[in-house]
Length: 140
Image (cartoon, rainbow, N blue to C red):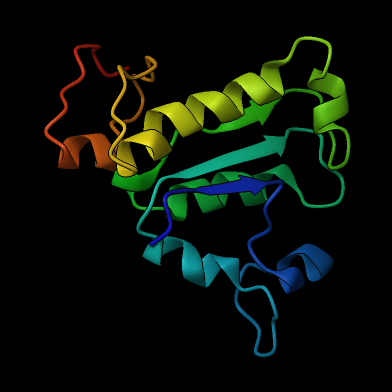
């Protein structure tokens, strides 16, 4: 079983990047748009808002395609492109902090190591709900 998925600068499909299609095409080797609704583990998406290789809207749409119980709060990196997210955030450590937050909040719970959750009011992780864990923070 998969404890969690981290998608960095994800694409809806290869053809949708190359041709800006809004529909599926036979032969697409990466039809992520078709797989996303069927994912059954926490998913964390990281995407730069100024990505010129894989448009930012691909990350946004994939996030919306993932079923609500499995969505982790996405990390939209303002001003970042496709290949500079880590470099842009290295001085502050924000990239690693967000990865650790996702792992602690979503993945550790699925491995039976429940720790007090990091406050992420936008999502209630399925793994914690499965274990009967309740969060006290209000949803925003």
